[in-house]
Image 1 (tube, rainbow, N blue to C red):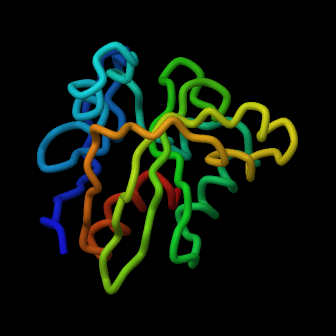
Image 2 (image 1 turned 90 degrees about the horizontal axis):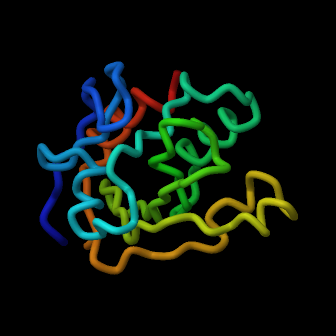
Length: 156
C-alpha cells in the first residue's frame, strides 16, 4: 500500500477568491497549489473545490452528490472548478477514485476535456475524456477521514 496521505477540507482564501471558502488540503498543501507546482503553465492555481453550495444548477449539485456517494469501486469525481463560473462548463479537475479495502485512492488526477461528450450525455459525459496529469502521483487516503472531510463540500 502506498503512503497514506492526510486529506482535509479547511476554510481559507485562494488566489482569485477574496472570500474564505472550503479548500481541499493534502498533507497541509492546498490541492490547487500542489497541482500548479507540477503544471505551472496550466493555470490551475486558484481553482476551488466543487463546492455544492456555490453551484447554482440543481442538476449539477445532484450529479456531484451522486458521484461522491457512488457505491461503484471506481468513479470519476470532479474535485476542482473555476472560481469565476462555479460550474462544470469551465475548467474542471477530476480524480479517478478507486475504493479498496478501507482506503480511497485517487489513482489519477486530470483536466476534464469532455465537452463533446457532455453535449451527448449531459453530466454523465463528464470524465469520459480526460487529460491526465502524469506528474501527479496517486494518493491514498483512509476511507473514514476521506468521507468526513469531503462530505463538507459534497453533502450539503
